[in-house]
Image 1 (cartoon, rainbow, N blue to C red):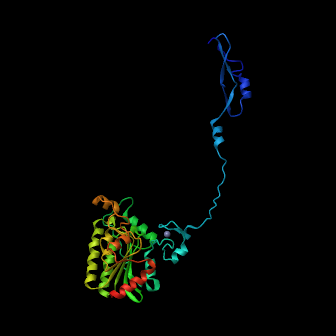
Image 2 (tube, rainbow, N blue to C red):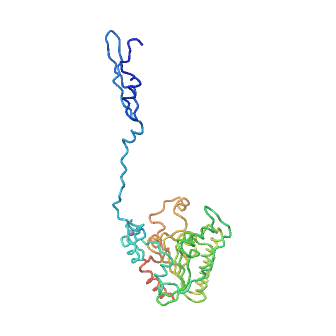
Length: 336
Ligand SMILES: [Zn+2]
């Protein structure tokens, strides 16, 4: 194009380019300026080459040198501390054990094992004899969901050592012989299948035979779906055995712990002559969402808590864990 010319020096000759090119950088044509040379002609001149670094070099500008971070937190073994689900307080396990796994800050009752309830309630801290621990589920439906029911049971047994979700036996409370059955929520959510139902039935009938009062401690997600209709039949079976107990005028105390739901609530848990519950326990049949969608009404605050149920006459009394032994002992004294 007439009147337009590149000033000399661009592009650099091959040798010059090589000499001036810095390591790992490429030379590009620099910015140009338009100058007015008079009489209507314009000239472009270059302002010299600029360095354009490689992208790798650009990235390095923003890279922070790696520094090893050293935590200021003291390393504490996990099993020594527990976080309260009620108030979020971090609690020393030793202190929690002393307070029977009740948060000293807010009174939240942590879930404890069947053996812990036995230690809490019984003389000598344990059952004198375990009943029916040989009973096993036979997996009649060959049920399989994300894993086989048989494998699920085997895993639960390996974790806790028990063969199903309840321990039954006899022991003494203040010298009085009682039959005690305690559910274990860790075993497949404390669900009631054939074994749980059968162990409760046998325990109740043993009470009929021996005259020992019955105490059942519930912690359950409900009937065990892996055994289908057979799990639902346990509701009728346990209720029928408890009916025989009632006819024999032998007391039955039911303690509901967190959570007691589904088919367990709908059968033996709510059939006690005295129904007690631990503070804050979730107690209900169906979940709140199902109820809300069925009755098409908003549910009140605190719905399905032990406190709500006590207020509405569904429970006899809420008993904090440290008063449990005394409360059950006094009740049996009155009832026997
Ligand atoms: Zn707490």
